Image (cartoon, rainbow, N blue to C red; front, side):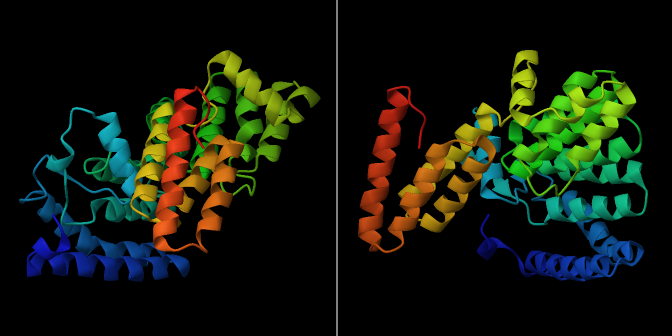
Length: 320
């Protein structure tokens, strides 16, 4: 359903939701999660009613917040007719994601996890939702649930920092299972995907683990290259799933064919970040060259890239 198909009441719900999100984000910036929750609650009540009414109560209504999520969902469910999937009226993924973050900030971890459950009803292709739920389950000390969450997230991860979060959570799960060597390996590869340590401090975690396990220097100074090999030998996940890479390549091809070169560059940069494949850097350089060309020249050059990629795939070479 396009926005032009919305009734005036449905459009007002969307507009009110965006205005509420802005106010809530400001309250959060001011470090007032309790006030932010009070602001969000009336909208949540409206969303609960909307979810029980047509069209949002219909099973074909989903709420993807990013085009890649739609691609992931359809690739993970090949029997689903793409034309049968329609967007919801209400922004459930954003609303319940924000709700979960507020509840987590207030220490209401069980409720925060339940809020993610509400979001997953409308969007099962967002890896970030599963990772947010893992954070709540970790705060509750339920590491079995953490393990289920992160393994559900992994096939869908298309963002490098989400891969880093996966490794941090996986390491923590393995520590509770007494598997210190594998835990150290996951900590050691964290910075391969989050060099700025946005979500964790792997060096501190490695030193703490080395001290707690009695394994000292051997764990504290484990290199990421050695750790990656250790994970591979143990059958542990390291980089992205085949589903994630194939989906991003499909999106890249579609954006190039459509002449959306800024979008294509964004996807190629994401592929490089999660795969570390140098071929994507080559493609990024070529896309930068296209900026000086006319629209027709860009399209012709893009088609050359796609033809070469198809030939490379046929020859068993990486797509780039």
